[in-house]
Length: 125
Length: 125
DNA sequence: AGAGGTACTTACTCGCGGGTGAGTACCCGA
DNA sequence: TCGGGTACTCACCCGCGAGTAAGTACCTCT
Image (cartoon, rainbow over all chains, first blue to last red; front, side, top):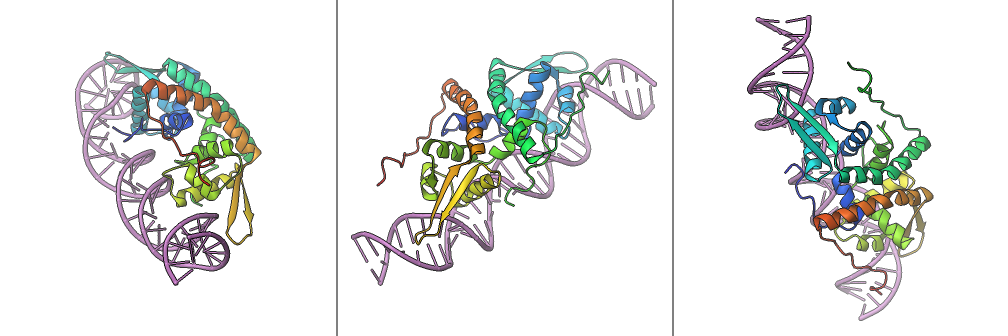
């Protein structure tokens, strides 16, 4: 719905994988979920400084559709929703690991700056 | 020039790598170059059915800037330009391999169609 | 009472990624 | 001579991805 076509015919595996990871924040969400395990919506948002609520939801919904993340809703009075990686999400993350290393290497080469997210995990009460 | 910012501060390696691969055809160009070695502009174009000349050039130029491909111009009467991967391009491709496998697996799962490019290598004269 | 937090939805807007098509300078084969 | 090929550049347009902002329903803390 959000992203029009998708699942369209692909040239190769990379093409298919890129389709799923396409989106400004998807790979970061994957990374965040991978490192912290289960996370609530607001936690995830705080982990990715700069992302808007709209994009966060849109990406999470698409990734849910693609079977990458699991969405657990608790029917409680203050709403509570937990997101976690499915096995496909985990394997995708593993496949992204080597890419991540290449990227880190590149950052060293070109001397790119790194955005450090305030790791909400320990800090906040 | 074409793509505005780039090389901006990144969240992590994946972010940095994605920046370089972002673009509708970049990963496919990488793949094509990896499989055929050195290729001329028109050959590359024929290998990626659907890509426009403009995007082909734009992507190739950006990838050259990023140090992924090497551009060799022969000052001949019928223009001849050969593109090949640099060592960084080769290593990026290696890093993309596992992603490619994940994507192939996904294509099998969801039963996505595959676009088969007429491999110009053997066919055409 | 009012601010703030939770997890959203909806509407509006804007920029740029990408597509189309024409033009260029030269040569070759039919 | 004319079509076609090589490797582009330039100008224009359009749609979608992404950002901004406001609204919602309910609860807790100050």
